[in-house]
Image (cartoon, rainbow, N blue to C red; front, side, top):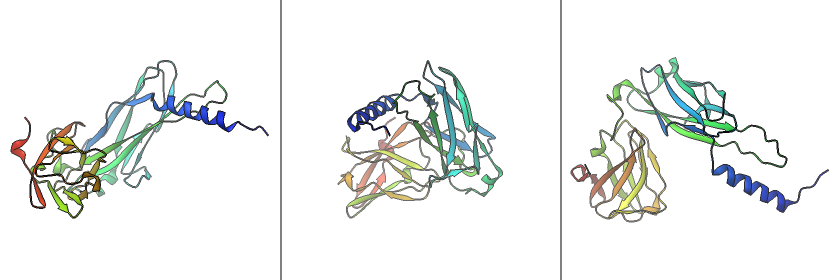
Amino acid sequence: MKYINTKTFGAIVTLCLFSQSAYSAIALDRTRVLYNEGERSVSMVLENENESKPYLAQSWLENSKDEKINSPFVVTPPVQRIEAGSKSQIKIQALPATNMLPTDRESIYYLNVREIPPRSDSPNVLQIALQTKIKVFYRPKSIVAPSRLEANPMEKDIVIEKQSDHYNVKNPSPYYLTITKVRKNNTEVKDFEAVMIEPFGQRSLGTKVGDLGATPTLEYLNDFGGLVDLTFQCRGDICSANIKDKKA
């Protein structure tokens, strides 16, 4: 039996982890997917940004419970080889089971793409298979907009409510609301963890935000993955969206 010096092995692992985390070979052409009801499929581009080695790309879908699924959507091809410096595509297709999804609000799934590096010719090398995970929003016909939304159509009805030591945000819209930043008096709240609020739901901003003052600002993601500022005016424990103060 061969024994490995634990200090040497630890150094190898640390070095490999550092080099792998600094560079991902397989890149997606977007950070989120919007699937409108009625579309036959949605295609995405994968690019192997490594200029010297081919990589395998493994793709699959998960539900909100982190469970792999093959319905009501399927992604193809599940595995493919992408040559060095080349591009390819994957496709998400709707199955008849989408007829069972809610018609008055969005549904959410997750697309996973895992890169599998070629076998190394060098001994004692730890290879890491990096993985990208992005959100897939299914939007039924009843709430489909003419184009991608630059802002939530019901943002004026979003409410922040103070409850003892935290703030709740109420999302009255049929769209998922992802809040990435919180500002108090134009100063960003540090250590804030992004919050995604389901349609017609509410979530806490967490206890780290402290007292947000009289005019807090939330930043949320739109359909393009861009940030939208939404400033509020607080009276007592209720803060209402101040649309007229939004930047042009």
